[in-house]
Amino acid sequence: MKTIIEPFRIKSIEPIRMLSRQEREERLACAHYNLFGLHSEDVLIDLLTDSGTGAMSAAQWAAVMRGDESYAGSPSFYRFEKAVKNLMPFKHVIPTHQGRAAEAILFSIFGGSGKNIPNNTHFDTTRGNIEASGAVGHDLVIAEGLDPSNEHPFKGNMDLYRLDKYLEQYGKTVPCVMITITNNAGGGQPVSLANIRGTAALARKYGKPFVIDGCRFAENAWFIKEREQGQQDRSIPDIVRDCFVEADVMTMSAKKDAFGNIGGWLALNDDDLAEQARNQLIRSEGFPTYGGLAGRDLEALAQGLSEIVDEDYLRYRIRTNSYIVERLSKLGVPVVKPAGGHAVFVDARSWLSHIPPLEYPGQSLAVALYEEGGIRGCEIGTVMFGRQPDGTEIPGSMDLVRLAFPRRTYTQSHADYVVEVFEELSKVKKRLGGYKITKEPRLMRHFTCEFEKL
Ligand code: F0G
Image 1 (spheres, rainbow, N blue to C red):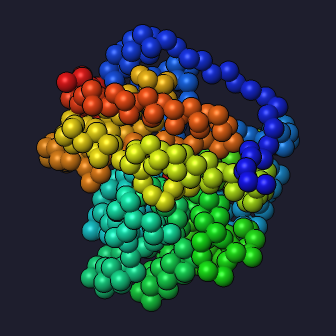
Image 2: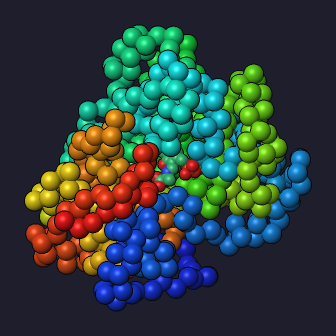
Image 3: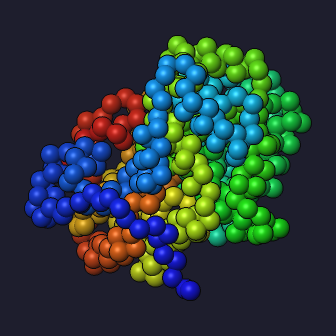
């Protein structure tokens, strides 16, 4: 069969509603053209993030009922721990309420002023936690990873040559080596197993712990199976284990590839580090057998981990993005290629080339997608990265709009609808204008700043 179908049927639904164009324009003006300011009920198709927004299965909801809310030693924790260890063979598994809580604990131990931490590309909360500790994060993704149209199969790979030089140069100031799979900030692009092994080998050569940010580990494993020589006949769980056996530590947002609406974990092998992490966890998150979670959340994650490695699911999941990328390309909309795992990234700077970067072409496109079709995406460009610590502003390295797909939530007709909205926009794009920021906080301005149309 040619058609890759959604490998599930729908038992429970949530209505979505289409406001009139005038209502959408009013809502936007009320939100000062910042899409984070919209009420989600006013959004038809919400592609703001794939984090915590997926649909849980009937088996996950059944597991929720089994959740045991004991403060210490809950059987739900032991089921969760077993499910994690089945895929990621770490000695210690420490639950947290989100991925960023795991990062905060890790960098309270590894961070500190004068420290330098390499990654393929740090996600913004990772960088935030590193910087909050006084350390500095550096991105060492391969050059192909920064070229939106380069079709390299593993654009998330670490540049091993630069990493080697980096470790030599920064020496003792490097507390750990990190890699993020898939590379979210670089377009959801995968990292090959060979590159994970190469990165781990360099970390070992310099005596550094190797940390994997594993948020989208199953999508990454699917790409390895599809694209890496010698991996085609292997099972997804085996590929996943091969990735994590290389690592000393992992951080995880279970809101992605564990099908959770909430949750995360920190996993590690070193007993002393684990003790420090658990002490910090008790101070900020909760007792080590629940972290910041309810027992029912741990149950949902344990079940979710057995579902996320299903090949029919992963085939459909990855195909959703590549389908939209193919159709947008045919329309002449410039998109990051090849398609990433969890999101489609549109190159707004090049599509709306009449809008200069400092008038935020990404924001203009994101607003237009809502105005035209009730779709909410997210600017990843000059609004997000342009403001400098001294208050000045420079263009971001790219002006992208990310359309991130919640897991198992939307169907192919929703995908077709998204493409159709781009079709309509391509007729009027010359008329789309830029924006100026009228009010902004000092840090992470994209969440709350206010805009005016120019
Ligand atoms: N690491 C990566 C690669 C992420 O994509 C995220 C979250 C985190 C860590 C933090 O996890 O949200 O559970 O605290 N990414 C979401 C996104 C928010 O929209 O890309 P968290």
